[in-house]
Image (cartoon, rainbow, N blue to C red):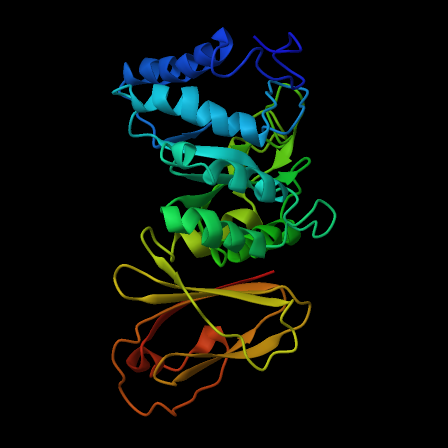
Length: 356
């Protein structure tokens, strides 16, 4: 059913999308997949049309351009999934590839009313996110551009659906966690509603993977025969990086604006702020620098929390600023480890601190 007669190495589906037999067959395969799981009472939240549709891989892959995804969505794939009782409520997403493709795929697909009406969101992978200028426009602002011009006005979401540090696991490498922290902050600050790691657990080789596409992930699981130290798992810095977000910026939180003022190290200190459904506010700060920095987090009443960010450290602050108790000009200094107790009165509830 593919033009290269091979389930690997790219190739696209044979024939015309509207009249060719294989496009409908491919859409029916999606339905059959979910029907079989449903027989075992396993349900799904969402699905993307195709993993990395512009990648010619040495494993199972299918190449689709933006017009093919648009037309497949509105003519075959979308109507087929929406008309089945098991798949009709799935969150349907397109792209599922790197954000350098956004300027092509987003206007082509979400500029079409018929395709847009069948879709829920845009899926993005993190690869190339830091390659500014090398692979086109991949600066974080391209996410806001997509939201403001196409996704937001039509109530469609933007979700990061794959990330990993490529290559075999590097045990305890802080840089890999820092890359996660940096990308999550930039993505959420530019309208991404979530950020998903590719594999939560891999073995010490970064697999198992039948084409040796080995990667470093948050948890490394060891079997009893690996090094004689028994079965165990070890958590990588990426695990703790994601924890600063998943533990404190809980579901249904809203990212809110913040200002970074008076800083000469904007590239080294990154932050994100959110309001949770319970009214508490969260600030996550990443000091990427090799030197410490003193910062003040000031709530809406003007009360500052003075912190020393240790070199290469991640800090999360959770606070309540719905009431003001005491002078808004009150100040306090000190490291996170020895916060003065009156900060509880001014509204700061807890601080999680992790450094290299």
